[in-house]
Image (cartoon, rainbow, N blue to C red; front, side, top):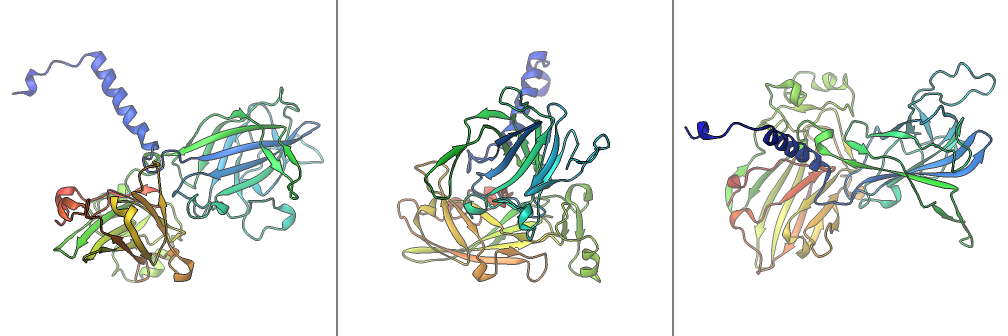
Length: 420
């Protein structure tokens, strides 16, 4: 009865509804735990040639906990005119295109919209430049800043030969290897300065332009890719991941394929599809997520309280190298000890220390999260010092506020289900 009393929607109301829904999806590119995170691509023109220029393209991952794993990044764009690529170092285009009009010296690529990928480790030295040849893998800024950059050199022909005649490429795309990143327009910025090895002289690029790419989980995945389960010493209840967190077993188009651990010849069946396939093949479960994170409050003493974190891989197709976990909890500013994981505080806002990044340790052989199965699990412990002014085990205080695996937010149980 109450519904019938509502006025008929006007065109203005419909417009506002559409506008609000559009704004909602666009906010997925904003990450409150990494508000300034992005991948910045910079083109530095180092010299002019008779028909174009030579440039070094550098990709910097300024995201705190989002990294790019194998099979790596691919960068695409559209030329503004009829440019070609004569040669490259440190990278290569995936297709040469139609170069039939050239005789003698054949270009590396004649495509209007080339796609460039990184070279593999072990590439001959005469084809390398600094920061190249890592198979497209980029570390997050917090885990290893020295491995958070990639570069390649490109010699461009049939292009402008001065700052006034060069036309900037457009329609940049960044895949890692799937979708998720949106790149802005190329913009001319101050020329990059370089310090010579002896640190006694500074040179600069003849011209520099820059492209900024931001990540959206909404664009990358139709459904979540991880979920959180909870338990505590003070309650016998184990709160599982919400049902159908990442898909449902009856909806194969949404969740990918589901395999029971007891399937005959499971190893040979899965190996036929190969590892690192973009489409997950998960172990059948109520949540259907490739990754489950479990947070267990182990004990409570007079001065400390203790948490065990367990990450389980349910994906038979992908093992996760250099994985990381970002956790938001108000007691991280009173952290005493982390064992089993590397650890670093993240301060998205200067005065708030409530977020930490955890990742595996090579010395513990847990920096790779193996395929689903008996070895597809890593564990670590966090010891928190009590702050009596804020500590409370009521109303779910001991559990995370947000949790991300490899930069994607995990679906959490509703607060009403928390073990109080």
